[in-house]
Length: 296
Ligand code: GLU
Image 1 (cartoon, rainbow, N blue to C red):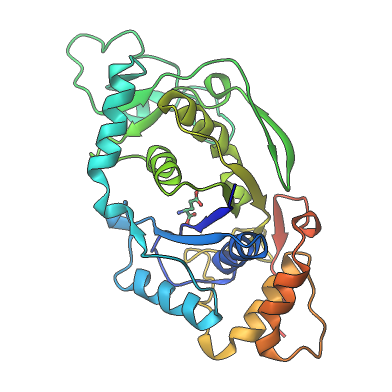
Image 2 (image 1 turned 45 degrees about the vertical axis):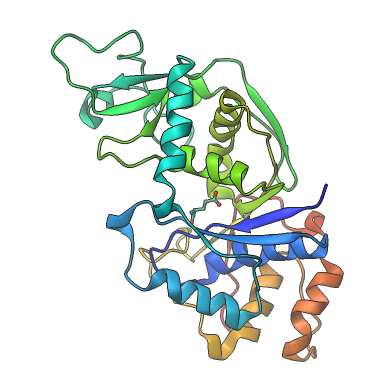
């Protein structure tokens, strides 16, 4: 099977060190295997989007030499596909309307990613007089098991640790979990390489793949880059955009972070060829978070 990888940034801002390592790791993993590398713009959440960020990311990837195959898939154009998947789940009795507000769920136990486990209030029907807000998918207690290529064996009971989760949000937007599963299947992705902040979402995605009859790709979750305070690098935590004028420095730092320190005297143009020849996912640190190397 030919390998097909992808990078799926949310255009909430330009590439910074944290998103660069995800782009680079997935690019190296696909290209070192002689495979294709696809790009998907996860622009579903319009209110969180930053105007111009999608184009800025494409320009940055191009400057870095991280070339992609085919045209970019924009999630904002895919509502019909997500709706069809939702209807398929609904026809199979796998979804139900939920009328609970955030406040009504706030008393339930905290689950795997710090969110409240949905207590199943509307599972057997909306309480009388309560209008539907969101649509949830029915989860099962039986644990989902998968072997992550970096993080190793993972096991999660989605029902116990997450609860029935939202696939159509109260604001009418399709949820990330549904969109990512439909897109990974439609793009025939064989290898998902992304940040470990999404490790806990993987069982939910595998559950949806099974309910929709989609294959499950292989997963590899790289450490999340954190700042000195231990916070994930993001626009909110003040991560600086990757500067195209210093592309080689950024790539060298990213390779170091990924457990592939390049030789110090390597000419800038040789960095990616060197990394392709030396890529071994077994060298990526098997941790969920890692401080970003200091800027030289
Ligand atoms: N769009 C997500 C992000 O930027 C990544 C989704 C994924 O790789 O599955 O964090």
